[in-house]
Image (cartoon, rainbow, N blue to C red; front, side, top):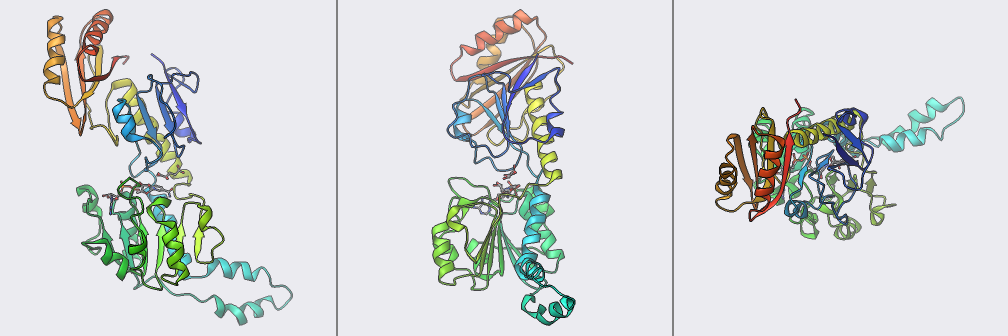
Length: 391
Ligand SMILES: NC(=O)c1ccc[n+]([C@@H]2O[C@H](COP(=O)([O-])OP(=O)(O)OC[C@H]3O[C@@H](n4cnc5c(N)ncnc54)[C@H](O)[C@@H]3O)[C@@H](O)[C@H]2O)c1
Ligand SMILES: O=C(O)CC[C@@H](O)C(=O)O
């Protein structure tokens, strides 16, 4: 069995190596089995019926029409935590840059010349004096993989850290230092912190999470950092409030023409995950997850489907995507029973409106195909896939 994967963006070679040539081709057909990508926007892409899964080598899936994928039975995956350390380090670097005029000092010293360069530097260095992070207050909005790491490391740097995340997962909550104070509302974070860093996903609900009202709460010396997504902050409101000296500085990882050439705004070209390590981790996790899904039907790290994992020992497995309505399991197993086949193993899981069932069978190829055809004819079935066990 061979699968064709359509790729977008630069996917690290260590990840592509998880898709060996004897089982996989890359970008060879108009009807690929799956898509592997980074930031490529897919909202205007019509998906071929052949596409079963889309894997995002990264955390944010706002470049993928996830709701449409769910309706079309396409499983969307991401790589939770795989680039969190890279983003954390860039956030910390920008906290340091915010308190110490390192770049302007380094640029200025290049303008000096002559034998008394050192004396000139010593005489004028006071214009580049800064302040320290220790003892200052950092507000972290979103305590997921990245936010939790930033909060913990900022605490280790001697900062007073307050975090806000009404949906924090139990796993992440365990990883957060007990010294990180938990805010009950976003206003508390915005109005009390010297530095605020945002680490929430961009969704319809979080677009402009930081709007005029929220920006008005910032202290005049506050620095706002956004390494999550540009649209989380209302850029127009931000420009107006910066103009009124409402706060001191905005650091963003997302290029927006409106924000360029502004003395109080530092714009980076989406560098958060741009380290060798993060690119490798994300590509490996995305490719491995996708290969596991294609070869076994098992699902993990999906943002729209339930986690479904059972070991695969039978010669054939039917992977069935269906609407989450009553009695689907009964209907599927009745089809198999009426054909006179035994089910070796079966698992069914649901997530909101979608459900996914794996049925393992010890039958011939023809019999397995027949069962698949019969199941396809049932009401509420979105897609079926017959997987042969090649191990
Ligand atoms: N700059 C980059 O290159 C880069 C790299 C990685 C991730 N990101 C962005 O950062 C985001 C976060 O990444 P992550 O790996 O930490 O994801 P994550 O899923 O581990 O964490 C996100 C956290 O945000 C919380 N959250 C959701 N809505 C919230 C709200 N309204 N208020 C407060 N908290 C809320 C969630 O409960 C979760 O704990 C990603 O979705 C992505 O958009 C950017
Ligand atoms: O692929 C990248 O460079 C950025 C990925 C990042 O935005 C993410 O959401 O993980």
